[in-house]
Picture 1 (tube, one colour):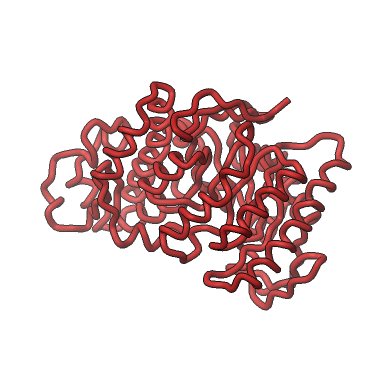
Picture 2 (cartoon, rainbow, N blue to C red):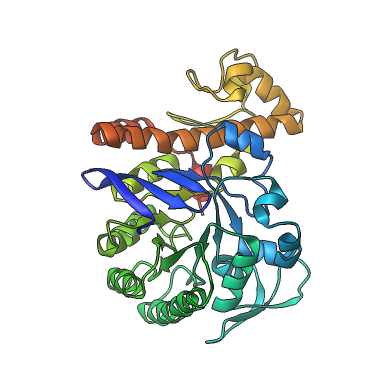
Length: 377
């Protein structure tokens, strides 16, 4: 039985249902990032209240601290962090290549010094799968290599070949287990269309429960990011979920949905909240700015989140300027609610057949700030 059911399609934009062992996920969906067994500044109950269907954890970070064996002894990641809905875990590949020191890549995997205390560590395809099994993930990502930007076609091709060999080993590892979660493959290929197509075709031949587009939002121009997605999506099966990893700004989410992507995650909502910035349908506002000092309005008129239903911009600015923890918590609640609700709105419009006008109006009205475009990855 397929994990993903396509419910509606409007010119390539899709509404669907992804079935996991901890319940279904309605797509398109935005997934809050809970790298270290917590979504920054948010309690599980607050996440449930704003409608989070699924959150992320990260194999690299949780392996380094506190360790997957400890989490397993505590009953698994869900019990450890008090979250009863699905969890997707990244394989750790991106963090190994972006955070770890003194990396040595081989066919076996990657040996490196972790970024916490420099302890020698190894993660390979089988290791990553073992860690994610011990965490109790509901959606597991295959271990991949994320090439740097920019890189040559030859470098991207060599990296992709390794990623595909590792993907096969991940699939074979799970084939030996009595039961398994959903397992997603990750397409790579940098900005090269032929490599993106080849990656997608090869992963489909291996056979996964869903497919991610990795190696995007790593410093490339937005047009190149869209091109990478457009080069992969046509070669991914329509009856499987598609996940764009680490994206992006609100207009980017809408544009990715228009291109047939179903699942998203991004650190922007909580990262910018910690800098006093809030998302609205017209763009971001920085509550540190003086004009908000005596502004009685909520962050966004019509928003139903706790921050907007209860507090004024003036009060939130006061909290931010006074460096009170409540300020960043309330902005985190609002920003995550904004992203989750944006994906929900997109789904509703797809179901009604009105997504394209919604897309056109939203993207035209939204003015991205320099801070959000520079921080999407």
